[in-house]
Image (cartoon, rainbow, N blue to C red; front, side, top):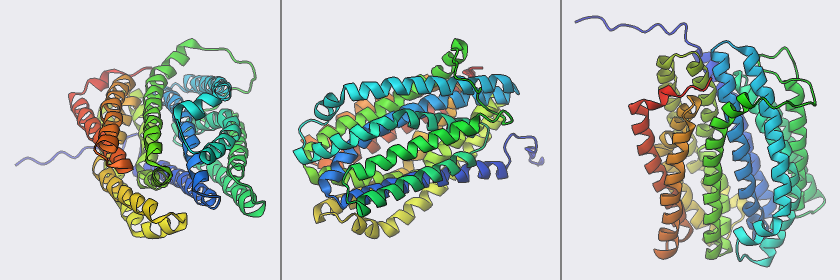
Length: 453
């Protein structure tokens, strides 16, 4: 028998230490984000279930926008990463500058549109909800909408740092942002006995602070990736088109995904305030369950785009497998931990018996499904996007969402009388379909021909 040939990986782009240095701050940053989201919910719960419901409804809109900006930022990361893989640092920096300007202009336009369409958002999308819930949603939307441009700037800046393999800096800025947010919440809600505005105002101030810090840091011309120190913006349409070739399909995919959640929310609101509250709390806890996967998805973009830029698909295959295994192991550990502490979390939310029991059922079902299916449905397509194959991911995801997630939410939730739990079952059916499509796509290998620089 011949000896098994050992592959020399000493010249590979990312050592185990580099991967850990990239992933751990990403996990911490996502952890902070989810913990602060949960703390927000718990603090606002002291105002009442109507406040929890009102804030959670508006947060669905904000998540849609955050995901849209994150998608545009991903386009910038892929372009910059592929240029870095080709050792073209000047082009990579130019793409970073274009990203920051373009994302800011888009955010300002969206902010104006949200204010102009406030009535339609509150009454058209959310439908008939209780007046008390509507009042809280209106206050929260008015204040938090002002933070949209700063949210976009932070997302763009953080993405640029990650593109150069530096996830520690965004983590540190995120810590500052979250301290301001949670501290402000505590002071305004418990100290000054404010209601919904006690959650909204610190959110605005924290996002403004984070945006200023991260953009100031990116102006350091000694960084591998930096932006130009100028208030004069000249559009480089060649680079913008490259960024948009990833950002637009990814943004449409993310936006449609959130839009689907919002449409389903109008269905959930018909089940009563208990269902809206159970869904809101379940969303907060479920985010924690998939936290390692979300963090590692950012790492996938950084690592794979660099490998694709270098034209080395053997490394792409190696790192894709490695990062998927890390995702599975870390998610299993996280979900197990959540199951252990779930009774304490539910007690902290001070929910009614019906709301707490519904939440418990959802979290057990979501956790088990996440460990088995989520990485292939959401981490694997990150490899395709980083390779330039964002359009196919978008088509698969949007098709799956409309056919399975939305249609089955109505079939299971409304017509089969499964209520809010049926909506979560429909979501997992959507995951299963995505997984099948992405596995087929991966092994066919067509995505290897789509490098964009």
